[in-house]
Image 1: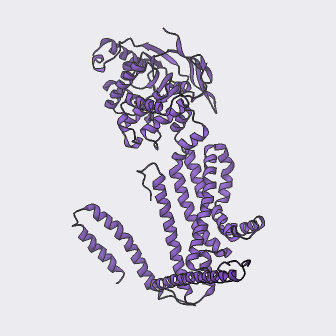
Image 2: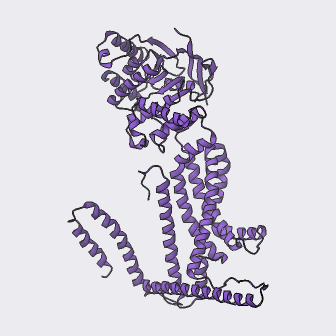
Image 3: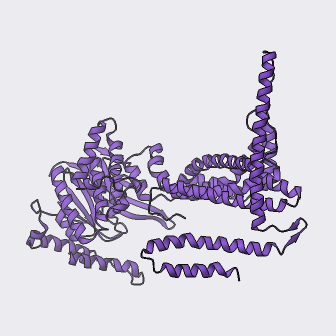
Length: 332
Length: 284
């Protein structure tokens, strides 16, 4: 019965809204309300079903348990931050005292090595995904432009693209791990190997949509515009800059949005499998931990992963709207 | 007649097919003097656009060649500016920027920045488009887009202006308006113009000579009609003029008697085309 309440409520609300003087306000309210209806339905359903499922770690957590756990994670993060600040403060005080007695002391401040919290894992993941995605974009767009402009190059590279596109990140991961450890000497400072492995895996798996869409976008330039370019005798660089890139921009962005979505999915999997720091490792650690809180922590992480993926996509959409010359285009 | 500025001699083009070469165009000979306005008219598929594209350098002739001011044409260039049928403005640039692109390309190093700006504005003023400098092509009407396309071509200061059915996609009123603009501009600048058209009235009204093409394959020039009407020409006065109607009749009789396009009825879409042309020619 409870489940049907919000639906009825919306019905009465929209009935009331029919009396509203501004149809636009009505539309906007609807756009705001209807997604809320979906979310509410989901949480109610989750709540109802979760209590029915009993696992080895107790009953499956419902939304309330997950929300509690989320605030626990937040508290833990704040506590850890305080501990870290205190750690550095203590060191600083000790160092100053040491220097008073022995000015030539070679003592240094040592980095804090506490356990990464949920939120620091989020930051790591975000940084990794952005680096991997940036690398993929920097490779895919120039390559796509060059390949798209030449049918011969396309014929050369198409089989390779089709071959590499469907490869799962899980298959790439061992190879990349081995290659990175062979080619990148781990020294103090610099980028960590695990970061490189995650970023390369993300790049390798996510560059395909951008590459393919750029190729398609570039090869679909209107022949009339190409003729304009020929009559004006545009040089190669200005041909690319004024004709090719602007006309391929919508396709390039479609590709980039797909790529970013894939990048985020791949990253979580890679972190999980390779035990590289990040949200994926958090989930895996909680899974291995198997405490009574683990399930709700994993649920919290899953929701956060979803929200971040959604936010990343919206950000790309905003960027696309900003860059796209065709302001009338319907982008969703 | 003056010495020819543009010479087409023995121009022909053929395309390789599975059954051997398909000759689309052959033996096109035409001398065009500086300042002359020449129209190419003929049924669809007779190779009018091919001739224009060869002059533009967008297509290479298989036989013969084109000579412009004693130089052979073998690649596209701004001295043979093209006004395309569907305006071909870059949709991501404003009206001003579209013309600017051409001006920067042609006058780089020859004009200063402010001279370029003046030149862009001058050409947009010629087509009466200075009110929409910062509009994008999607924000202006079809007729306006075509005006900007003409301004862009004129801004290249071409030796020959090539127009590929420039008014084909416009409604009758806009078309008449633009035809008057083109006549004005041509009177001012004395450009050499080659224009492709389907419209008999347009051809007679604008041209010094009308080149009538035979049907393909192996299309060539059928007849050339000199239009000896005084300029400036007034469409209203001419519509009642005996000579005008005589020229008009000659073009019509070439198109619908001598070169009547016979096509099997089962290709209905193609068969419908000449019918539309007839209606258009009579109603205009």
